[in-house]
Image (cartoon, rainbow, N blue to C red):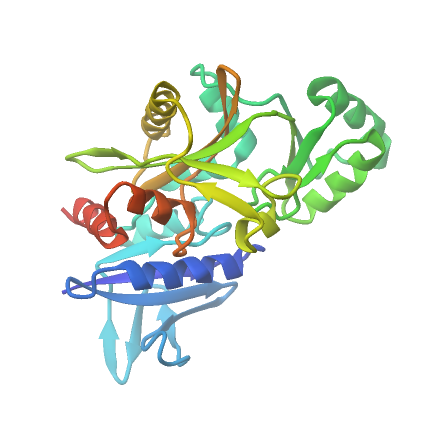
Length: 333
């Protein structure tokens, strides 16, 4: 029986979200075919929970080969399923480590992870292939100084206008994200976003219907999942909407077939353009009349029972166990 380690935790504000995803994946995986374990990484504390979730006992991970020893017996893994949202599991660092020690893993490779983790760089890369994105400005922490503050604020207002969205360029789950309607609130929003990481992206507001599109590919097939329409009960799809129920998520989305097909085709194309994609990705869009704008690409999407991907998998007539089996078999083939 193949041993699959679900790797969770991380060093960002999304730590708890990652643990929820790990619990979801542990529940989904077919335990008649695979022996799952959960590993939690946080700073220098890397450990496996050998009897998770029945016991909180932990065993330290040997970083030479990502193994652990429990009751005198050493266990190594056949594959890692990365579900860390944020650093080091979403930005390529963990992928590079696994590549070095030769441990197969579920999501995209080092380059693809690093690219998609940087929202500004990824969107501009995909925009160069004709995929529409919002107007945006990037700020790095070394540039955000009192002497240059007015220069940057003027540039943001001229480029993005109001309202606009201010968010961490390397964060997720809407931590540090603000919808800014007044110029006087822009500086405060930028300061908040910088608490989540070393760079901030400011994007123009797009007024339309938000949808999300999941996709995975194996050597044998491409599966574009049904779309989910996101109707937030708040100002935008913030943390409260995502995790505390202040949102209506409609799967399949209420869209004409032609629009659905365009979005699914775009997601499939993005999968191929981001060289090194593996496993499941999710692309988020805003539909503005006849135009479809990419918001961002997520290569480590949430995997709780109520997350978008599991919803879309169910709507596609599949189970998450089947999808995980597809991906694991493809990676270990």
